[in-house]
Length: 114
Length: 116
Image: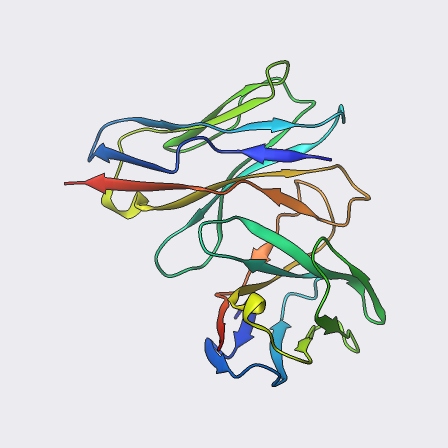
């Protein structure tokens, strides 16, 4: 199994540009998440989804949008990139919530906005 | 609001020795989950160990064990027989029980270096 796959691995954007970070999982997990990790910090939740067609905001959703049209895919959209969005972005999935269903993380996308 | 504090930004240990990483948290919840994640230079987040707050027995996974002190809200990670491959960032994380939609609250991490 590939697990959670994120593309691209690296990206440089100019201020005001837009892009979509792709995330796909092949484990048939219902729950999917987007986190960002700023330098020297832990991860913070941007958006999450509990199933196809259902998404909700996390701790830091401003400047981002998500969609969940299928169980497998959970793309993250940046509409007007700002330097404050320079970060490493992680997608994760889980079968359900709780300690008996831990999160599986992708390898992350390093985004730089200049 | 829940917070997670890791007071040691960096630590180092000699290969084969034992090291303990500290984590404290603040919550008014009585039931919750705690985790330690490892992030090697490859950047991938890897689950090391997990603890459910209602279980008094400390979790162990091979060379990794925790000291869970619920009253003190402390959740330290002990790594025995440290190996070079243990070099990584270690994050302590808190999760409310089912219904919290998997929102993990992370600490800022501790950078562990294992020296030969």
